Length: 285
Ligand code: G3H
Ligand code: 13P
Ligand code: ZN
Image (cartoon, rainbow, N blue to C red; front, side, top):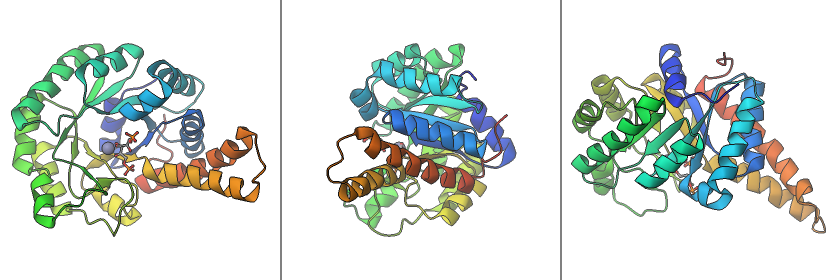
């Protein structure tokens, strides 16, 4: 089927009380793994491209791969820009065929973040492209920060209410204790804060940095209103782990397909397991 929008996927997820997996698409094998996992689970799915992925694969190739996956698939797939920080790149992605973009103005002062998110919405909404914004700072696990500093980075619920009122945004990424990359210890999520945010904004909430967060915690967050769960690191770990295994077992192997093929299989299983945790199996239409 043709690509769908993230807004449509999240509206359905809101009604159904589940979350849609947003998996980072970095190369052909991972695009195929996301598609196959979604088909096996009969799940709607979001393929997202980061600025790094676009730099690596090229916008045309990445868009082409995901469009092809959607068109040859029987499940709904959306193509989303992950952490777009450059307005012109956001526009290029929309022109290229993305059905959703994230404008990440989280490092900007509040009023500038509002102004830029509105500017993207004014362009995207009339042509049916979804927009995700971010409020609060989702760190990296490599960031060595103290608890008091973490508090300052978290999304303020009242500010979230103001942000949504001012922008009219339909989905919002929040900082409640997750971080991008591999966690050093057990991540602690501020679920009370999430509950407060949801009670004030009542739109689908997006959870970034979800790799390494225990399944039960993710499910609690979904109960409290998270409708899009971003996963990249766990796919990287599975994919590269399988590549390493083949290369250590067969050090003389020179056929990339013999290394990437098993990696793709392992990635499929990782993604299927996430889809089940998010409750989106059998939600395709
Ligand atoms: O949110 C971050 C994603 O994991 C993308 O990472 O910029 O290395 O592609 P990347
Ligand atoms: P992880 O790599 O921690 O899963 O985060 C992914 C993400 O948030 C992409 O935007
Ligand atoms: Zn992210």
